[in-house]
Image (cartoon, rainbow, N blue to C red):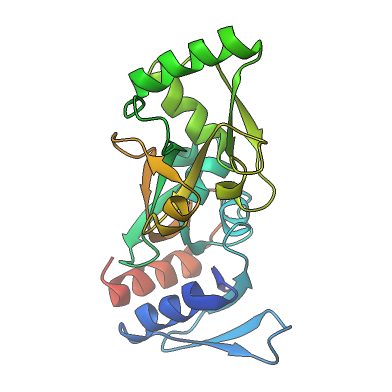
Length: 230
């Protein structure tokens, strides 16, 4: 048996992950065509590369089907209930930075904090007869954040496409989304609340707490971690 390492299957996240491991003496490579999700690991024996979408990696770690995986903090905390019991962060990789934030229309000049948002939500419901809609793909994280911030009169609506466009399209009054620069939000006439973000995320190497390992695999994991300096 080999340890399975899950890595994002395409794009800059895959390339930067390959670079991060390569700088530590572990060469990861995609094999076959772009349509094939297979790869190779050199520099250590007993480790197998599994290429997956970043969104699949948290669930595969939680199910114990992979032993380690690289994905965003945001995806782990959103997709896994009691995530700390299922995975352990081994190393932050220093790329893939993004903040999960709440943004409202720039025209809402009196709304800058969660207290302001709560007041605006109450006023919105009194005026329109239904709760303010906040579009997001991160229901678990955003609900907890708004609850801790004392925001009551709102409803979360799922954004299937570009979250930033939902206010312009009149399907939501505010958004909660991942951003790295805020440019797309500004282009859609949205402003970020002047609060700590819901979550500061980056690409992170996680270990599954749920995967079965024999003595040889545990030793491989120790050797792997030592090579990586984690």
